[in-house]
Image (cartoon, rainbow, N blue to C red):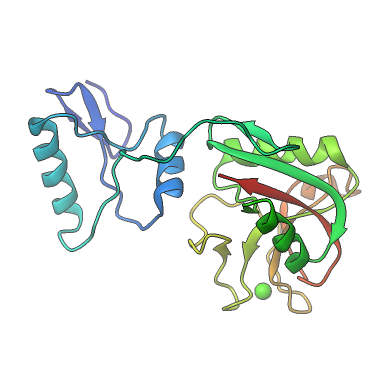
Length: 213
Ligand SMILES: [Ca+2]
Ligand SMILES: [Ca+2]
């Protein structure tokens, strides 16, 4: 069986598996697997379970590893005004109102969510389309900040920014102490930075995108 790069083939379960040597929570791990074209691993029988145990232990015998079993309800209606996105299994809303980062975060919290976290290209594109339908001329905050430690970018759920990033050229530049992530507008006069990420002052006034689930 042909497997994607870094994955090992397992004949018994007719699947390919990879034990990732980096840290994530359940949702970010699920998103990583999804962007590989798969899912979190499902050890449905003893043979597969043993294979996965050996695989994870070869990568790190000291770490705990998440696999694909949950009692979270994975599908369901989104809150009012939110759009469902199957790939990331979350709901998103681009707010057509101006706010600084902390007030935007509070608005998302009161919806039961967080500022949106575009962790992969598919989700990033979805959010770009969502915000541009609301206002192609505005910049929008999303849930990424380096306010706790300069240069260490962390998503709103506390996980560290991974390989996927869509900064505009020469960003983040921390110009005048910028610690909060924004999307540049779709109609920015400089076409090379349209819809790209920029670090912006957290006290700046921007529109914003929330995520629930
Ligand atoms: Ca900064
Ligand atoms: Ca900047």
